[in-house]
Image 1 (tube, rainbow, N blue to C red):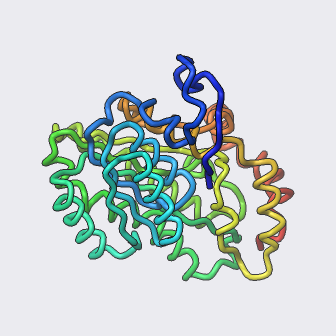
Image 2: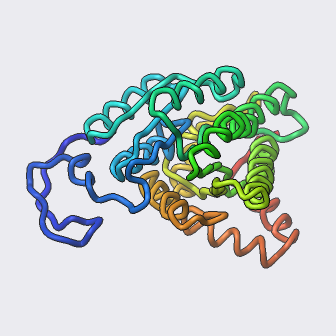
Image 3: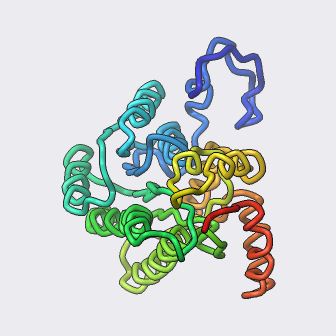
Length: 309
């Protein structure tokens, strides 16, 4: 959590004139916004922490009105308070993205509150570690329910409103694991590959139908969030060891940097955005090696993720 602190610096995001020394971080970044978001109504799921929280704050700083949701009400309240400190309009609601009817009612409530909606960032997600052989069906279903069906539910619930806005954009968060697969991640891989296929098809459908809705797929690499600490795992798996490895070696990009990269891609209407240098390098390896990457990863990953079976 960010706390107020004194700064004596050149504005780091603009490279411009010095800023007053008594501003906190929220005030420092306020007004340093990205073009194209002012006045827009943006919906962000999973906004209680990580990339979702960073997206909501960056959108607020950029002049957007923000509807945020999460099942984590404590984190959601923190995000809401920080958006209010920026001075942006915000609507905060507890929402389980797996509950389709609730999602549809939520979409209607956002439109009723703000009058329209222009963008949705389907970001909510969970992680799971376990080999196919020992992963119970219920754990596969839970990951698919949140990570894939949550995206479908959000897209379908808001799509009519986005079309009606005349200026819609759907941003669905897949993963680097929606580009390649690794041992111990079959459930997560399945969901994130599904998000990728769903979103890429949707972008083409919107273009073919000449609907005023743009669509972007996001593939984050290792982001400094709590996703692995909050992950579930197959019984007997040493999740603490993996979390330490993940946090020490595999997280490279901050959520704030990730949010900036994503919003820049949205502003430019990119079909796909790779978030982080690791995402770009590994995507290149996969594209160059074809299925050959599997031999490499099946050797390396068991050392990083032992006892997933």
